[in-house]
Structures are given as structure tokens and as C-alpha cells.
Length: 209
Length: 402
Image 1: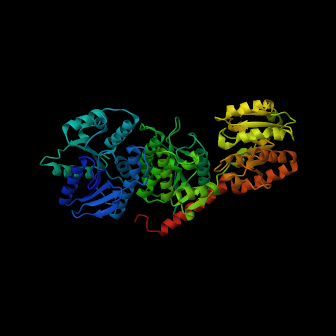
Image 2: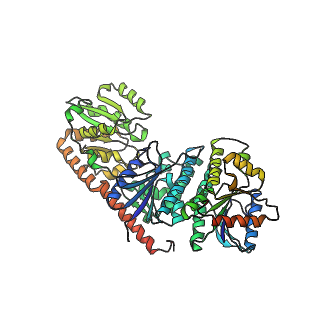
């Protein structure tokens, strides 16, 4: 199984606590013989390389240097994510099992790749804009919410870390209950459950996609 | 190649959605390409009442849902629209088994959609730069403008070839984005000549605008500073001292009231008619009735008005700037005058009005030129050659997917 993990933060770039989850996830997957490509942002450590721990990192920077905010920055960065993901796709004989997207930033790229190559994606939720912005509904917040909605709609599964988040997503984005899976990161069965969902997702192509 | 060349063109406007000049450009270009056996798809934004899929004059049109996402400002809306455009176009290209030879982008408004798709499907990208943020704003002054400027630069960087409509724009794009000259291709804008060949009762129509003894001087353009209507207004008394004429000014803009005031001050209200915007039906007839058509622009990337006048056999006076400099050869296909100089402009107008035989030669030469160089059919053949060239280079290269 070959998995692409999309995350806007990954060591050495640490923004919040999502980075620890992604780092741990990649390490545990590699231990279980999963081909792991972490696609992430870094301003200058760009390109793909195999790290000592066998994780392949693919870092991209933004070709548009000047921005008016995080939203335009994210939206233009997605084309570079698409470029590098396509590079992995073509260099691995078009064998990518699925994409695991961490939070909203790279949902646009995951959606394009799904439509282009029929590769399913999982939307893994750390937090949602409704909570981050404390319910603010400016056009800026609504834009991000609309991208998160796209993720809930186009993904084949949504992985959340608590029952509370599951209920919040159902409440806020009207997602069918069975599409959301709760897997607590600290639990014993965590990585086993993640792998189980990955396996289901790749087999369910056509059903969920 | 086993099948005809297939192109997917991207434009944020296509009829019935008309915001500016890109819409008619893409309409006529795609239609002429289809006539010249290119399989053309146009991906564009939706418009109330227009179907999401249809075939227009042999062109497959896909209108995407472009107002799905709320956005804080125009540029963010554009990037979000591009996200949706990428999504829907990716599904389209997949439905064609990825068998698309060229992606063609029109301006930065579709930059991120086409760049993403280029890399995903590994299809060569061609970009037409119609205008630049630098040109539109006369420099880059804010982060917002710089972001758009850098997006435009990114598009020219990612494109296999960059098309501009005039040599003036070629040199501007080369300078402002640092594009190497072998990537730049000049293919002019076109005009649909047949649209301007009309027969009607000229005398009756002309009576609405001018007295029979008055020559009709026509200006067509937005009433904004760079179009130079103020230069024309200052030239009016100088022309009238030599020849009796009526000045018909078509268009609207923020300078309308200052211009009206100036005409009033000069006591020439009876000699100048401000029509505001007019419909195509009226405009074509005005061109056909004009004794001289004036394009006194201070800044002009191309100058489509000049082509319309040439197609209508109206003698031309243009200021020697931008694209106009290339369209008109002085004293052969029109009269060129100094930029922002009402004395020179008055001289040019008077020269045509007082020498009907010369005017006849000029408009005949101009018509021949427009037929030869600016007909959409000929332009689409040139573009098809560019597509084929890029496609052949692509086939020889190693970037195409294995």
C-alpha cells in the first residue's frame, strides 16, 4: 500500500500540535511496511527525499511570494502540492492507494487528484474553522468553512479524534454518521484502526468515491 | 497522430457572460479553431440561464459552478473559482481518457486551475496574456497588486509558450516578467469582418447623428483618461476652422461630465454628440457612416476599435502608441498622429476630411490589411500551428507520462 499524507506542517516546520500526530502516523505506518509519502510545505527544503526512517518527504514552497492572507497563500500552494503528488504518481507506475489529508489546507489538491486519477482520500480532522474562529462568519471564515465542507463531501471517510468532534462535524456540515470514524490517537488500537480504515477505503473505490 | 488535435481552453468569461474583451476573443477564437478541425473545449464560469454543458458553433462548452464559495475579495474569489474549475475540468479530462493535447489559459484569472491540471495530466500549457496588472495599474503599489502580478509571472513561467496580441505586449511581458524571447509568440487579436459588411439606408441612419453637410467624425471608447477623448475635444475647434463636421463620441466613463463641461465652455455643444454606450447594431452602422474614425489613446495594448473601423471601411486616425502603432502604417492604412497632442490630431483629421481621394486609398488599404492579417480564420490557423509545434516538442520530450 502506498499512501500520501498531505499536511501543512511536518518537522522541521512546527506550527501547532497537528505536527506530532502526523509525525507519529508516518512513523507507525512505515513500521508496518506501508509506503509513506508526506507532502508538506517548506519554504526552502523543497523536493522529494527518502529520510533515514524510510519516510519519503516531498516539500513544496509557494511560487507566489506576496500574499494578502493565509487563504490566498494556501490556495496557490495547492498547485504545487498537485504537481509533486503527480510526480509521485507517475514515478510509482500510477500506484497510489489513497491520500490522507490532515485538516483543510490541501483539500483542494486532494479533490483535484481524486477527480483526475480516481484515488480516494480520507479527511483527517484535527480542528475545524467553526471552533478556531469561535463562530465568526466573515467571508474569510466562510471561505475556509466552504473548503472544509468540500473535504467532508468529497472524501470517502472522515477520521476524527473524539466523539465530540464527530458530533460537531455532523452538526455543522451535515455529514452522514457512518462516514465519520472516531479513532483516539492515544488508544492501543489506534494504528490498527487507521490501517483498517485505509484498507476499507481502497477497497471501497466506487462505493464511497 | 491518430485523431485531431484536442485543446481545452480556460477563460473566466465566455458568452453570454461578458465582462471584458476576453469573452469575445475566446468565443471567436474557439469557433474558428473548431472550423479548422481542432477539437475545442471551453471551460468557463457559469451564468444565469446558460446551460452547464452545451455545444456552441462546434465548440464544447463547460460552465462550472463558480459562486459556490464565499470570498472576502476579488482575488480570493478567483483562486476559489480556480479550485472549482480544476475539480470540474479534471473530471472532464478524465472522461476524455486524458487525451487532451493542449491546455490554453487566458490571463491570470485561470492561472492556478491550468497550472495544477498541467502537472496532474502532464499536458503542455499555453497562456495568452491579454493585459497585465502592472499595465492596468500603471505599476505595482500594494501587496494585493503584487500577488496578482506574481500570479501572472507564475503563469508565464509554467507556460510552454506565451501568446500576446501585439509586439508592444510581447516586449512589455518580456520586461515585466522576465520571459525569454523564444517563449513569446505574437498572434494578433482578430475581428469578425463579415459582421461589419452590412447594407442599410445610410442617409436615413446618418440623419440621426449629423446634418447632411457635416462630415461625421467618430470616436468609440470608454471615456477614461487613457482612451484620450479629451485630446479629441481639444482638437475640435482646430478641425472646425478648416471643415464643417459633427463629432460623435460613443462610450461612457468617469470623464463624461468633465468632457461635456469642456465642450459647453468652448461653445460647441451643437457640434458634439455624446451617445453613451450603444448596441452592436447601432455601432456597426456608425462605423459604416463615419467619414473618419479617431483612436487618440494614450495607452493601448492592442486597439480593437481600429480593427473594427478598418473592417467597416472607415478611414482611421490613430495616435502612434502601443498596439495602434503596429496596426496602422502611416499614410498607407491610416494616419498616425503624435500621442496626447491635439494639434497633431486635428491635422490628421483634417487631412482625411479634406482629401477624399486619399481617404479612399487609406480605407481600401486598411481593409486589405484587416482581411490579410486580422481575420479570425487566419489567426486561428496561426494558433493551430503553434499548438502543433508545442505538441510535437512535447512528444519528443521526456516529460510526458509513461
